[in-house]
Image 1: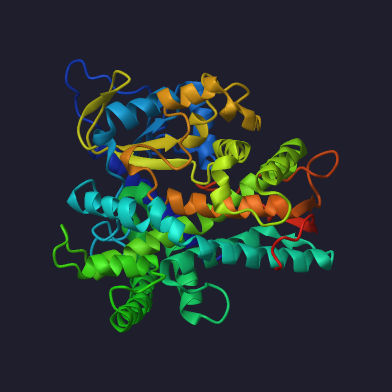
Image 2: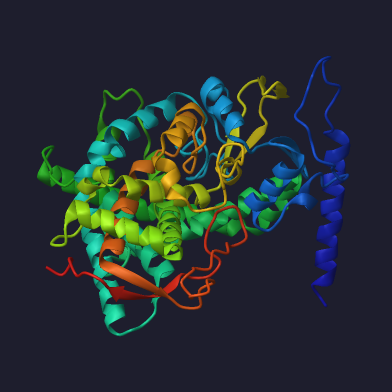
Length: 512
């Protein structure tokens, strides 16, 4: 009972704040001919908040189905434009890409470690972002560097397969959600800083825990931004975390950076087996670089990589396996393709992937149906027109990849898992002409870590299909094989329940 007055006071303060915002920040008179996007019916003060659902992208999908693919929304004090069709995405990412080349600011203050002034992923479109994008493309995350790190991924996949074998031999149930997250964590940690996130390396485990804590804190701060000035109350409540989490991360990564610098001094410029931290430190120490990056920028960059390279990658792998297990004919066809390319005497290798068109089609189809990050944002950098509607400078654009990749005007049977659609000339032509496939975003702000994510997806999924059958318990299908595909509430597409299955050995090609 003692908490009731505090809750009541909070609600009253919320009402007063939103009311003041509503009165004093109502849009002024627009110029003649101004044509904003259509908008669903809104309520006073809260705008369209009442139309949202716990699974955000599905709520937005329902709105676009009812009111149209381009909508103006007001989420309490936060204005936004929702984009939900492939033709609109194509216009944004091709003809108007530079207009939408910035992202929303980091919820952390600029003077903190994770602020927009230090983050590459959230940096405004400008010299720093362009420089880092070039470094990512040519040195850090390009195809060449990913090939150099191939053995790291293979070692972690083999370790994962051996764990599956151990569980299967005992006829026990594997928590694939947990095991694949461990695989993604260890692979990402080793590619970035040459240390596994599980095992005896205490620094790497601390880093993994801090990344998770930082992501949760950022999510809370992002939610608070909807409430305008009232967010300061929430930030006051979280003030200790806001100060402590970046500080702990800063101290931990400073130690890791110093260790890498000392190693570079000992081994010299011809050091072998460089990880991503070694490469970025070379850029940091390059006095002739176009832009001299700071240590804070390096640390925040690695946080961005950890965040994008762990949960997002593990979710992607889980959804691909779930779709394959739920569609036995596709699983069988993929295994036959792997055997025809690789044979039955060795483990599949990343170099085999270009010879496996059906596997590539399965991955694309699973990602079309289950984009791990179905909502991504852009900021309009200057007034422009989209599909004939006026888009004001500074407004947030919410791209719903879930809707774009299920657009019935583009996709036949859009809710069905049909990998063959990516093997036909018709759908390939559509994909070239329209921005229809956007699981990693689009345009110049497309996810820069897509090569790192795709590399781990390729080697882990093909190896799992080659070596194991998965016996799903408590599945949705009549034969118990179909995986439960319910998703957690929130803005990302994660499984609501752990993916539990007994791994049954089909071919042991990883013990030698």
